[in-house]
Image: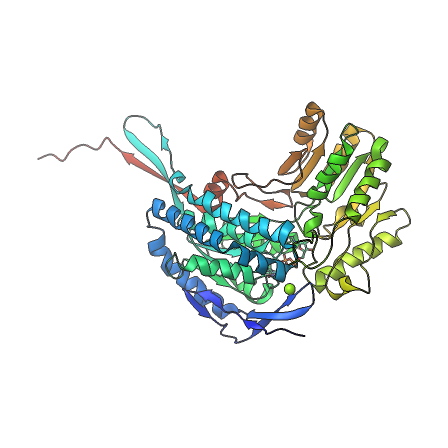
Length: 492
Ligand code: NAI
Ligand code: MG
């Protein structure tokens, strides 16, 4: 039985509006492939109206006392906190991420993010420069103007919060485009924000990448671009930024290594690997530890325990509290993940350890469900070991020589995250320093918290957003003011 389809509006200048195109995008629940909502299919004209209102709002928002802006963020955090179960359910329904393992932790982190940045508004400090007694030279941290933000669907509200909170804290205004696959929970958070901020300070628009994202990226009145998503689109955003010499922050893809040394407690580390690979988010995470380098001596026993534990994960209805693992976001991504699995199955060099193609019958065939899959391969030089799959497909590679494994770990154009597992802390630290990644964890697989300067090396990104330093670097510009104190008095 199909349910009632709820028609949502986007938020421009404090108003809930349709697109001037009057077109809609249907939102499908990936667990049952049913359409359950629509959002406006925004186009260039909507972007123009939104940016204009944010430009006007900037005049007064940038002058609001920072302490007051911080208080507003704290009030928003409390409001989200009060409604977090409802928002978690929306996340689970539109993304297919399981409510217990993903959607609730995501919204809890969103509350933390608003609280963290709410507490930082007094930290927008400048410096004084010691140029001698005759001059007062100091800097101010000024906002940039209207931020254009584009976000993906994999952790939509968390990634939105990472851009909303620092933008508003620093006195910028913001036009954000939600991902066409998961706009509803972000819309809910944007609605909560509207109760606390003047119209136009934060506009939330919906639409596709080419029709709505691109006009936002190229809009002449945008002063900064902040993007999270694929490396391919990230390059387009950077090109758009180059047109007008705009600052840009990019949080892009990854193919992160997990290196397991032979001295680990295997049972405990297996749990860590499951966390690092983000299996309970169907591995739709840019930081997924998707290349598992296992020492030869423990390879067989470790991989067997890993496969056994993965087999016990409960895959099913994202809204059921018992579920560990939900669905892939949409048909396009599902097909992409299945194509990688087929490629693995066809490759003669490769051995499948567990998983494989998803079932064609039964309850899991009703949605975009996939099953945890591991391939064993001799080398790192293989499509499945090089490309971001964004699905629960782990490539396990044996290693023996430490220098060799670090070299393999670094053989990637990505450099977002990495995981090192050893009881020998000296080894762990040396490996962490040798790995070319923006975030290396030793003996832990999860643990992203506000305050951590999160971001990528190489083609995994540019700039940092998740910390005080990230906020100052990415959302403010320094102005230097020099005053000559040696001016002679007017002769009377
Ligand atoms: P995508 O990069 O196309 O989408 C991300 C956002 O960018 C969406 O809001 C989309 O509407 C927008 N966008 C797309 N084309 C645009 C354009 N030309 N101009 C402006 N905005 C544009 O990612 P997609 O297609 O959803 O996923 C494809 C692959 O990207 C995944 O398989 C995964 O490998 C990677 N990805 C990485 C993410 C990360 O967190 N680093 C998040 C999502 C996807
Ligand atoms: Mg969908």
